[in-house]
Image (cartoon, rainbow, N blue to C red; front, side, top):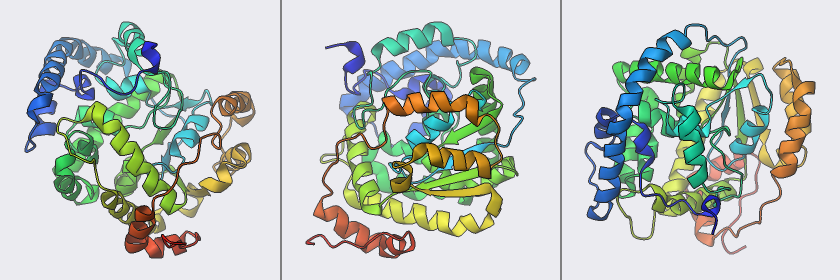
Length: 374
């Protein structure tokens, strides 16, 4: 079997791209299962070795980032997990004006400016060729969401659930409602996020930052503080489909990320509750976004005519560069068709739980309420 077709099972954690001090903050209060001691210790030791390179980057970045400035307002692709954010983000990033966080920066946010050449080549040799949970191509230069990178820069993120699934409910309570954090912690997060964005722009030579991060549903207020003219694209999909898909996705990637094992995986009910809280948060905060700075897209429409919807985004946001980007976008679509995945069955339990937690949201999004036995 080729090294690029292996599933997500690695001897180390993504935390290798963090610093030793930050790793200790991420794991603080959570117990690592004995079986994962070797994985954690090896990851921690590698992070200590990389700390030498981190010091080099800290010196270099002060000089390299002085000239970095976005010339266009940033665009934030938001939506619940498994709603089509990946393909929409990837299409927008085919534009050569786009700046974005790459997969390499997502894993090594402290090393992206100075160690990319050798470390990227090595990491690409051990990556799967395609993401096993949805078949999209993988490469260290491809666009990536930001929260694993941010968790390597500071310790706040609900993605701790991928390390500590037994503590999901505690993590949910402490990490979900970002705007409720103490101002000092929000200020620290904002500082690290700006650093991440500036490095992304330098790394990809972009002039328009394009972000994709479902976690940002809970940070819209903070993002507007950082970028007053930010544009937002909210993409949504059938609630039953996204909850089922997230349940499958999360439990498929857990074996490669977890530092404690939860028998049976994370329950469906947890994701139905997350869906309810995420969509309620969005529906509350959407009223604070300037009408001209927000576009809402139904995934089922997007997969039928992705290029037409991309053209509409460029028109409504008055973005230049579409004609030059269209050939690359069409080529990307030919390799990654949004309707080319095998459908999966939605379990009756998912229908039941989504109805319990989010029946009103189903109606507000103009989907049909379905009962498990229908």
